[in-house]
Image 1: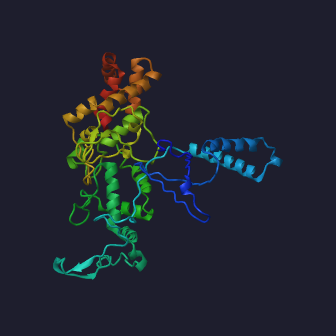
Image 2: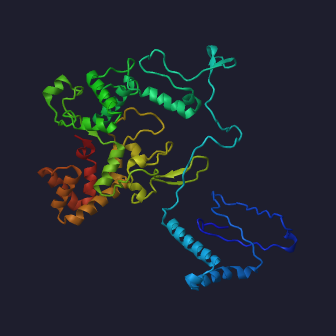
Length: 448
């Protein structure tokens, strides 16, 4: 076999017995059997014939190359020139191949494949027929894609080409849904973006916007945001910038008794409601504080767990045995590989939603399991150690390191009371534990 020497040149020699000799004009068929589990390709197959003995072939090839090199350029034969040209070309492209990044597995989907049992390729859109009173035994005429006739302001006039392919049908439907005159779509998008920044949407039922859901608290504001999103060609960045630069978003979280008597739930946004960091933001913040966060964008998802085959179909997933110092742990949480049936216990304790169900609005809880996870999880412990190492490199004394910790984690200096508490705690339990102590505080966990 050639494994693991893939991607390189290989040779094989076949000695033909006298019985296999053929007459002029005959053919020889060479069949290669592939027994490897991996999918390997033959890049460039060449067949050469010679009457030389097997032990003389390899030395002969090297001798021909040496002879061509030693021959003056103006005296080389045509064969020698081709030999040197071939050698230089191979050296050049072998060098280029070695400079390529390591090969990675790529998954591709196609609808062109051989039928296997009930798995048959669907080369065209599936026929949908009209059923009278739902009777599947007596299907009637074929029904073509269409739109609601009541929505006359949103045009629906696809041509036959757009309806002949499944992908074109989906694209036509998406364009119809996101039409500039479809106010429901743009209001729904604006409502969700507002919820992302403020923790609660303008309309309390983001998955059921309309007459059957809750009415928006600020309908004019929702309409204006929807128009801004629509008129900017659906630019989410434009709407994010608009909200973040608003005085409403930049309000203080200071509580005022007089305002609370009128609007205790802060429905009219007289202050910025404190919001707890979600699981992904908390994890990424720890990585950023320790200067370990990998900021590169794109690429495949990373598995932050060890996995081995199980007794049945479901494998055994080990989150605890995965070292927190692995390079895969430094990727942003958006690139985490989500095992839907076996979620990460730490992220689950931090109210990370179930990946197998829709979550229009996340739940926020403060329980004992969460506090235990924040103090004892190996990832949090490791991040505390990494942050303390970063601080100890620049600050030798405890008070200066405590001040640097607060400035880095909370963007402010510690109060005299906080300085006293953290200095005593650091002297007794080390700076790494003090970092963990701060991670578990309301000042760090909540955005004000």
